[in-house]
Image 1 (cartoon, rainbow, N blue to C red):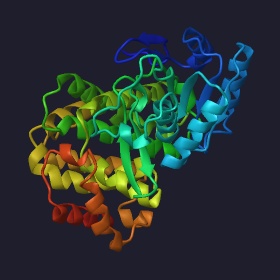
Image 2 (image 1 turned 120 degrees about the horizontal axis):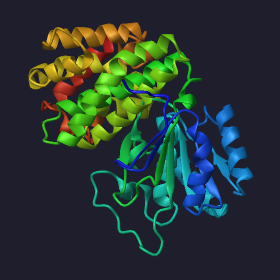
Image 3 (image 1 turned 135 degrees about the vertical axis):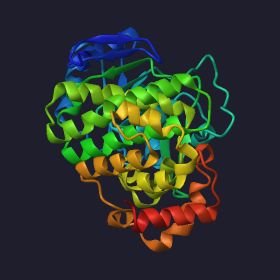
Length: 389
């Protein structure tokens, strides 16, 4: 029996500090990296939460001159990243602490990519050759602290950022920038409102499902995806109904992290569509994924049926068919009060063609297990708009 209230330290894939209350060790981790003026980045919705004030007080007590930057939207924008870069440089900071949900961490990670060089933000786009980094002026140390069990992207420097000229999301990253430390503290997730608990948790499950069914040989990611499924599927409804359940919160946080590790393998059409919907309509990423998931599962059914029994086994289901899997996922979404279709999120019919064209330019489009044309993607988005589940 796993004790999710115990302290654990892991070194894979980056140094991870796990356990309730371990946020108190942040100051030590900063000092280990010789930080004197850490730059804390979070989202607008988290800036006034008590744990941010507590972190600032702990860092001050340890002799550090920390600053907080919170001008990060739910779907971080390029303009916000560059404004953060200016604040970092003007303040003479020497490290980044990215804390929050996916948006806060994406904002911090993106800022860390550009503060010590003059490369354009989009030079770091996933599909491009990584730009050269001067060894004498490397990336700053980066510490990531998730406050939701959702995005799971705390072990990489990948960040989703909205291009405000094209109104599209792009994934930016550099292989030389890795978090020097991650803190997984389930106590930070206890105060999350039920809706955000559900939306971010479904995001984590979508990561695991999409990564596992990709047609690629990557047993390390596959193992992480399956264990993530085992942890997330039973525990998300539990924390949705019992927000203070610390053990289940811990299981969700570990499952989310594992799902984030798994999508190094890639993602699929759920994310490709969701990225573009979020870029245009500023919808919550996890909620958008949750609404789109059933339509994409139906579209991919024949391409993923051979892998479905592995997923249903980890979910503890007795029916290992695609229909059994699909039905269980839809029932699970109902338990979490997820809206039925994209029209409930305010997405209009006249956006379908435009969103489909943008979707096909997303890196996750190319790794979906079933190939598709623009007409296929348009039909799929229309399904998600009106039929959903």
